[in-house]
Length: 505
Image 1 (cartoon, rainbow, N blue to C red):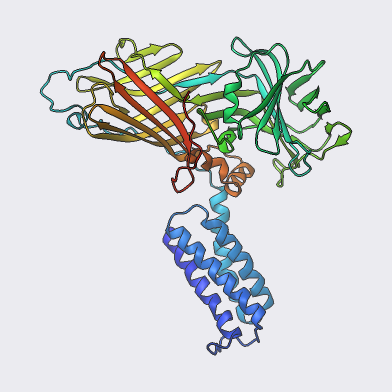
Image 2: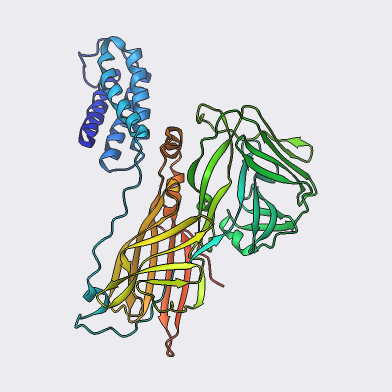
């Protein structure tokens, strides 16, 4: 099928060059009887180049080929209607290409199962296999799954009608031993930074907001008397008022009274796409995620005396018009591998093939006589997130090989899809370097057509994890203490490091 589509796109594109050639008198084309002006000739050339580009992109397995193909088909069909007498049979390949494109969007392709690779050869990782145990059987894990509890969140956008300071707001509700009880509102600023307004009942760590945009600007306590934010079957019910840093009154009110049944879905929030100096990789798994419906909804964003028009979702969903306000009453916030600089303690002795280290559970695999990490997981409320390695991640203290590599997957509830990537381990005279690259991005698992279409039109939903890279450096001092220095950096799609690396403190 792929080869046939490529051939069709290339031939269809080449045929469109005939219109350009005739318009500019390069060669006489007897098959085109109607006169073609140079203006129309340039449009024939544009259609040809677009279709040829689509064919090349499809041959290279680049996911944006369908966009070029769609534009090419639209241009082609416009020309066919104008020059119907000569070009009407070009409708046939256009229809075939459109059927292929629509079928690709309609087809639900769940993530392929994460298959276990064969165990890495013992000799490559730990030296000659003579039946004895290599020196150093302590098991170290450079990985951490840090969970930040949150009850629910709401994201409000006014980017199309911005304030002088803010382009959006994000109310969040907490009730846990870490953050306390209460509500906060993140103000997303025009300059890319965030202000955090919080009720007195919350105890917050300002450092964790470096994963939001360009980082924290200011944090301020506000009482927010009478503030509420609930999610019912009818949708969002919120009424939040506070005073911002300029002394202005900010009012955020949404009363959703839709009679239609909510049809939520799972999502990995693209929270980390704007972070410039991340101390960790934010993986926010939103369950029961949905947009605010426009019908029968009262929606107010008022700053001081001015009302702001809320952004709208450009496409309908579930036969309803939607605001670009979205929410989740059931989420799992994971910070992968927060930056670390210090002593790394070994895991406790295995109980069989399992180690419990605090709130993290490790499943181990035996490579001959050496324990390796096959997976680690954490559970919060009713959700569990698991990081799996294939082949198993090597025992770093026993590792004497030059290098090791493999793949990993991070998965929670199936509705939220998976994140996949690669790991590498390098050994330079006992100095270990570990790298994680989420090069596979986020792979959604959603059957809803409108959501799949949204993911195709806005690929940043799936691609933003590929712009992160984690590096850890480990070595033992003379007393045998293992030390680690780790950090994240943002890279572009070609793997070039941006000047955004965070220095550990």
